[in-house]
Length: 381
Image (cartoon, rainbow, N blue to C red):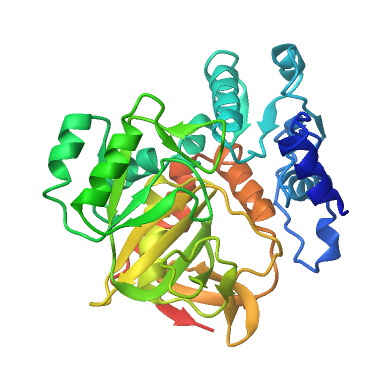
């Protein structure tokens, strides 16, 4: 029996403690471009505390490789221990590798808040960025107040309002939980009767069951307009002024493309890139993934965003069969450059540039705003 199945059986059937042991991989097993930062000699490099995640495809190993190759001193920060505050005292910067799951995220959020706001530490990601992670309701609010083209969504914590609105919404709808990736907690809603059933479950004493047996969807409904699309999700990942992305298709007659495992790596449409860049410019910092659907009229709508990009390989975009990235130029040109990149390393480079060599606002004014201010973007390959 291979290790993954054995561990799941021990955790879920035999009730062994869930493993928090870090997972390991070798980023060097894939050929990728070396990500280097031009660091001035007059600026001291911060001493970094690096957290280790136990995700199937770990983040921390890519971060460690970047730190080593760019001469940043670091050691492992064991934040789960009771003495996490004392252990943090020696670090100037703490780099986090979040693990999926609401309880894990809540633990990381509260600790980052204390480290930043009470102890004066610098964290990557910062607290504001982490709020966007695995919280669909919060992300939708932020997209809406920034006038970005998010799909029309009804979110409520009020039972009576939700029950009344069920008779006035247009169907079909998509029901989502506020957390969960890979289409978890996502289902279609055909009519008002189905919507009311979900509402009763959500506002019941115990709440609505989720894919996690230890947590339920409670007192929050999230109904998103169903976009009649070409059954393809467009994912655009922005890291600084570099653009990656791909398409995802659902299996069979399912409408859910995320988590299907069917990924198409081809060139991206300019309009989707423009919307993703605008979204990143308004609410992103180091990196941001933007999921979009195109309706029958050709308009792109944002369905979800994520400040973390989970990848298995450094190949995230192909143009004419060639892996690489677009970079936004000052004149609005999207310049294609071939190469393979680990997004975690690019994001860390952008973070250092935005927080140690300038500010986030200064960085965006220099690298994003000139290109975005042009009337239209154009590709150059």
